[in-house]
Length: 66
Ligand code: SF4
Image 1: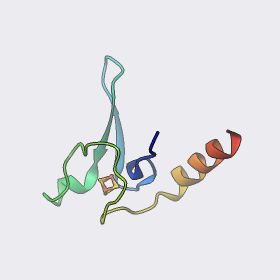
Image 2: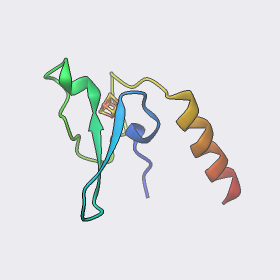
Image 3: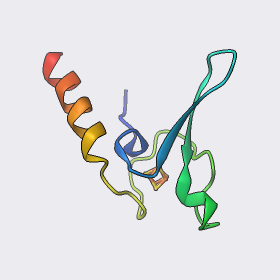
């Protein structure tokens, strides 16, 4: 499966619905209409991407365990 950039982006906020569905909200959409609030996944290229160091380390650790 293709990893989406949003997972490790500082602008992403995870939204879990009461039924357990998971959506990735792009906080850039609040200030910039060029970005959709819920970008269609996976995102493989994005000019607004900014690496979230904390999440990046966590994802790297998970990949290393596989
Ligand atoms: S800026 Fe791009 S990579 Fe970051 S959450 Fe928004 S759509 Fe995803």
